[in-house]
Length: 389
Image 1 (cartoon, rainbow, N blue to C red):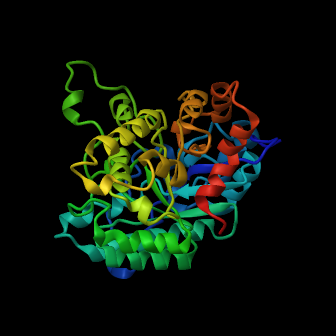
Image 2 (image 1 turned 90 degrees about the horizontal axis):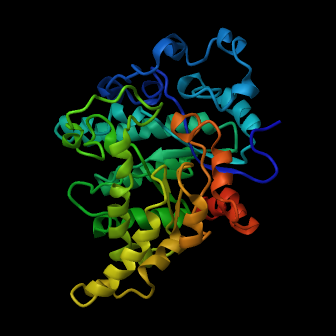
Image 3 (image 1 turned 90 degrees about the vertical axis):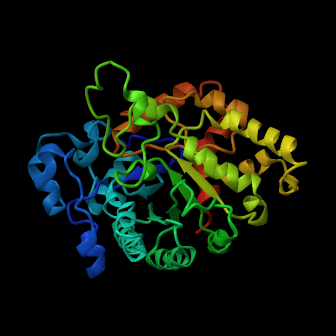
């Protein structure tokens, strides 16, 4: 019996757990020589299996797959890094579609290129290798949707990587939620990116992680706030993002800033079919953010004439952006206060941050929410975001 049944479930957040040579095997020769080795220090006794790209048969003999499907996390999970096993995992999960993001691969080149005199060939060579690898993982199962990576540091090269990613089969692209070379995402230099994504009917994604990868920038919360005179945390949370309680409090801030610029500067007005998913950054913050955007648009319109848009700022969000709540958040309350057209179900499989029973948590938090709103949350909003392709 599948974990999820009785309705259609579209999963807006899942991951591949990379193996030792996952990126290198798909990289061009120059890029391969410059890639930073993948840090597998958190893999523990699974390293030997990661060398081969397949979990040994002794692992599955020791566990009952259906019983432990949601308990096994990270590299130990069924289908964590083997595409055939991921198809079996999807059968058991019962999900109709699943976005597949990388976990750690960007750390091998994103940020590293800045240490090499802004080596854009390394940056976009790594981007190309990642798109090849993730699309190949998803190639043989139409339920799996490959998420490519798309840094905006050079708009012309980024546009080329959109074309290559689309050719390979990527149906969406993860864009880092940060200014690219000191330019806002609403800068005219990037109009060609938003126009091409709109033309291709392909959304872009913002996701936790890119800003926290070693060498790529700071953690969400400055380390000074951890200098509190108390004991250090006792362990590491999960298989994708090494976060703590203080990081959790402001995970969404980079995405909020990125999207505030996009909305207030009129990008979603000029590109009305451009769509965005905000993934694994929570959704509780969305309720006050929409209110603040409308206030900012009204208050500052006299001194910033470009704020005089045809729609209220919050209406662009309702039309073009979706968000995945954490299973620990009060999803029912969020839907009641922000609307049922904005939010998406996600499992975060096989990262431990998604929990061992996210469906139970979501159902408990949506007690009293009508069936139409639930159907939107679990399936229809995903379809609206990802498009007909």
